[in-house]
Image 1 (cartoon, helix red, strand yellow):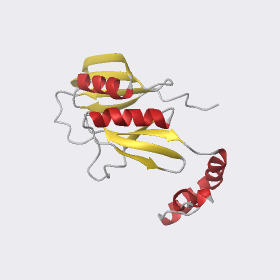
Image 2: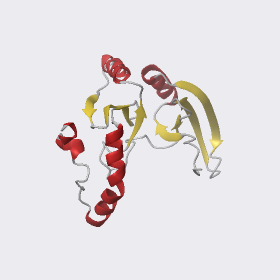
Image 3: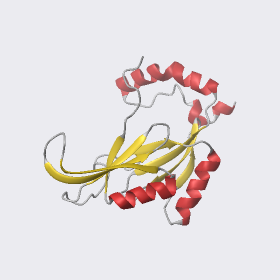
Image 4: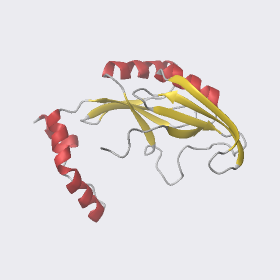
Length: 181
């Protein structure tokens, strides 16, 4: 039995709670499920008003946001030393058709979308929400054999990386085209 049952929620800061709720409803069909507003942070007792909104991301997953009107303007969702492509939230969708429908909806409203990007075991698109958070929609494409091969080498790869800080080549087939051969 796993200690963790599921992720209760993932929370990010947003620039505007209402705009964020409407955006996630419009583009990702997420249902607005809860709003909590306080003048004091429950955990720290810090006097700091906030609006905390929760969105249903499907499958028991919840995505939440804080609007913090007394804090300095949100300049970036990531720290300055982390590349902009690194921190992102990847959301699984049912099919490539669904992913491409969302892509078309985003692009129709002038939202820049990268991809689809081929990752061998999944395909995805990338875009940003109104607060600048990077999102990814992903469609799994791995075969059972691909998953088995990756499972067999995961510890060897991690151990080699820990020792060398160089990309191990145990799963080079994912990027060199040999997975088709």
